[in-house]
Image (spheres, rainbow, N blue to C red):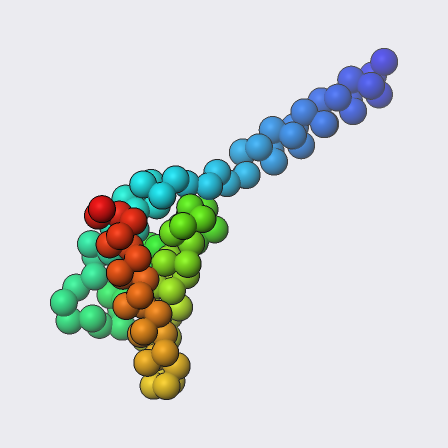
Length: 113
């Protein structure tokens, strides 16, 4: 009986631990709100430090972003990561800049109506 009880308790602990660590996918509105809050920190001077700070605020949203917003969040992060490098690849930055602009347009469509 002790073994069965131990096994059941262990199974319960494992199940509750995995439930606590499981991330819920956000709705589009929730993703929009969280990206908006993080993006509000983008200063007009676009320093590397500020860009890194904003990217780090947005980064936790990528795995839980809504299906519609996931490409937007990914494009923003890729652009900011490249831009904040010591020596960004200008060709890659231009390519990512285009995707960043498109992500901004999509963000506007999804989040601002």
